[in-house]
Amino acid sequence: NLRSEVANGEVAISATDQGIKLIHSSSLTPTSTSFFVPFLQLLKFYSMHRHDWCRSHEKAPPPGQAFFEDPELDEEMRQMIVEERRQKHRRACKKYYDKHREKLLEKAAACCAKETHRLDNMNDQNREEALAFIRHDQREYQREWRKRNRSKLAAKARARRRG
Image (tube, rainbow, N blue to C red; front, side, top):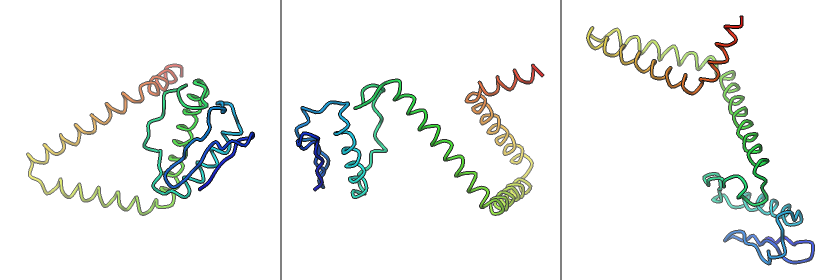
């Protein structure tokens, strides 16, 4: 059982095996830092010692409706977190690729050789159908990519026209 006390001595939070609960929270305000800091410490403690406690699946509240949040700062913070996560993921992918480059290239070459062998051993009609299916998939993927990256493509076209 872990307790956190507010400056005037009232117990604000109590974390037990059953969960975290507020006690005597009527005197607390959203700007009360004496409440907020111990609460974060309790959350950290609680998440360290309860392996089944996970909030990652919960949907974030709309901007301005969460506790202690300013709508503009909240949206900026979310964007910063998203961008940081994206950059971290890209760095991890690049690091993995750099570390396992030879193995990945060998795998890709083996897969390509296997697919080529499979297409070579088909009769003409089946081969044409398979190649048409592959081309259709490629065009579909290209169409989706262009839809997602329309602004990027427009910027490239403007730069190309400028010279």
